[in-house]
Length: 188
Length: 188
Image (tube, rainbow over all chains, first blue to last red; front, side, top):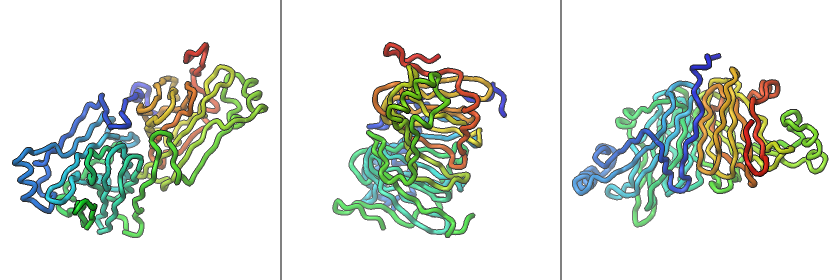
């Protein structure tokens, strides 16, 4: 048993369940279009987007806890709508550094897909919309894709020691991409 | 790395973010008033309640995942409103069997308190209302208390191997109880 002084004090934090706003978040991670070079099929379209406005692509809001076993990290993920060419805006995607750890995404707003892959080449995609909880099992890399016309906002929970491994996805990519073609969502 | 065949397939499950309904839950745990003997201060009032109707006290809805390290269990907890004497309806409360594991409660509906204690005697309570996320750190026993007049509904996430230890709370109780006295919430 730990000593009393080492035990963390409980806390509450407010989350707007309509918009995903977490006003007391202390960490705020931003990714603009210019942070996404190398991720989209149409690199020229991305460069035009960056040159025009370099829009905010996605944001993550956190109020962190210790990154040690037994704790649970949580965040709000907010992915803006848009396309690069015809490919829908997406997050970089990652494995967990401790790869055998799951993640839960509870979608609060918007429409999209959670696309997932394993190192061995399996692929899966699950629709995201308000009230849909997607369970990303251990060993699956995962990326959110916004197929709608408003922000795709999710409440996410994962083991606090899981860590993020972006490097493998930079190298591997995902086997399928998500496009909007004539108003239809196409995964190919 | 695990072999492909051993890797769990991702899934999505719907949760009504207004009511907490999870229509595809496969586990449904119910606790009636008669399951709560020994927990309330006024044992006679509880017996009268049981004799009159033995009302449903709280329910838990789950769609379980493997109870092994790296997975995340999640559920909907629904605690009905009411009092036993003047003490508000509450859950039994538990430590985790692996005590150094956290739990996240995201309240979707209702009003209440999350009351918490450590084995060393610390006590804490955090208000619960729609949009409030309460972080129960490792080593804290926790119990939900409904202080309002509608169900107190939360979406909960915890490490899937954490387990539930109810026995220690049966013996120890909590150092404070939550009452409704002349319409006011009193913790004492």
